[in-house]
Amino acid sequence: WQFTSYMFVFPLAIIAGLKFLPGPVKQLTSFALFVGGGFLLVISLSATKLSHYDAPLFPYLAIVTAAFYFLLYTVLSTWLSSKTGPLKGQAFAFTLTLILLALPYNIIISKVYFPKGDYWEEGFSVQCRYFQMAAHGQAQADSVKLVFDSKDDFAVKNVLTCYKEALHEKGLNLNIVKRDELNPGDKTIVFDGWTKQLLERDYETRQLAHIDKCNADVVYLECKK
Image 1 (tube, rainbow, N blue to C red):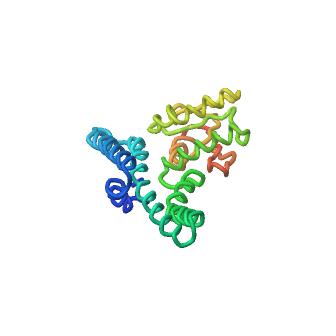
Image 2: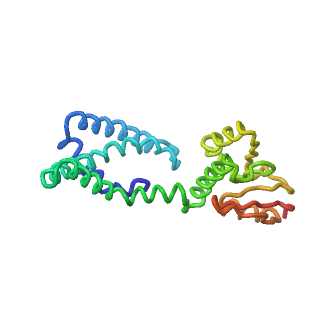
């Protein structure tokens, strides 16, 4: 589901890389297929299957997929160069190849800079955006608790901790806590609607502010229900 933009190109890329391209590209395609396929097999047979486990697979898929675009560019460049000259032919071929990548890259940009989707995906993306803003002095970082739901513990311990330590070096002391570690009187920053609903279920809350650029709410916990 994270590779839908290339799912129809991928079989053609395998054929292109293994049959129609020069030896070094063929060897690279074979290597990527062998390592990527082996990795996919291992995680598919594992007892636990979390959404981020397949992340190391995508560079290998990208290498294989690139074989199709490389072949396409080579064929277009050769044909157009015979009609318009080498410089124009290569420029036109490069532009046409980029046009085919416009949709997937548009999706990537929208997910990174305008995150929407499942609550866990959106919440994780806007947390990273908040830390980027805080590093540039564009968001409040002190005297608030950044709250995440307990099941997102892996995210905080990995990616989010990197932001936290980077801000500590700038003298900003971020207090990142699990939802069940909060107390009445705390001022929190909430990054997704699901966590906010859980807080409103357990506490009388008052929204103090909304941070538009990262779609986060500053919420004050008045008392437990």
